[in-house]
Length: 429
Image (cartoon, rainbow, N blue to C red):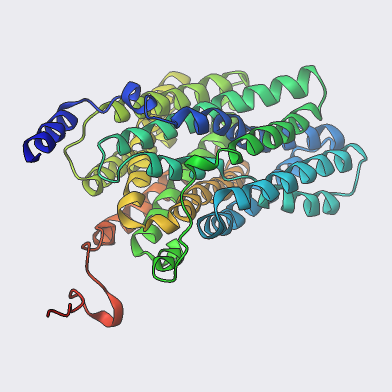
């Protein structure tokens, strides 16, 4: 029997942790397909609101403000939604959340078309953002159910989810733009609400793959907030820096394209940036890493800070495209490794919440970066907005270097209660 186990372990160790092997995981497609449909609206929401409100008010400033309220509301409420999902089950949180979001999105659309005052749109934007279904973190948590914790496919799953997220953020804005400009200005937000309703309910119906909810008092220790884990707090700061790159790039690339009288170039430049992110994500999932994830995060984030710090020096579209490609290639490894570390740092009963903290940190960093970069572009020189990704990543890197020891998981089988790090005594007859 021992030799059989050893042979199996050797076979698993030598098999390459590729995407084909991952996607052949039994039951994976039952949550991947509806999960993809349900997370697509996440990438459509902001742009759909901007295009609709700009059409009805004639002001990009008003449109951006309403979209910002939605983004901040999502970032603030997402971790709470994740914690409820860990405590009561994904289905129990997802179904009412999907219904509230659909109703809120339709209400916001009707109010915008009715030329409601801006403060009314702000009020409608709060529940719209707060109820955004956190499907991406829920899918990541389900991979933890399907795969063993020490499986080499866990890193591949993290990479696959990162690539899927990036793909949605390429397709989502294109779909929203096409609907709002060729069908009707309200079509983007209404489609977003419809996809959320259908995809979210189908995803929630897959009860067999959702993480189990701890039933007894002993296992409910895992339901302590993921924010109580020191390593999660370090990762939140790290992901805030990544959000500053996304937000700063969005504003600064648009401003650069306008400054050279080629506004259409903005889509190309951002597409190159996104392509670098996707390619690096695909590569990360195909590599059988031997380096510890903590070290990979430090090295990858240092590369991200270095490349992001060079963006403001670009004086041509070609140079900016090259730097944008490099920045995108550095983002994916940092994101993937950060999500991978959650499985080591956080108990199973709090992982959905942990994932939503990281997703919310990216959204919050992005919202803050959009605001600051826009002010810098207006008040300083063309390209000043690129200082935001530089500052955000450098500050996050210093935090990561200073507190890197908190990313090392606590030893298994030990207790830290009352400051004691010893095993509990066992009575022996």
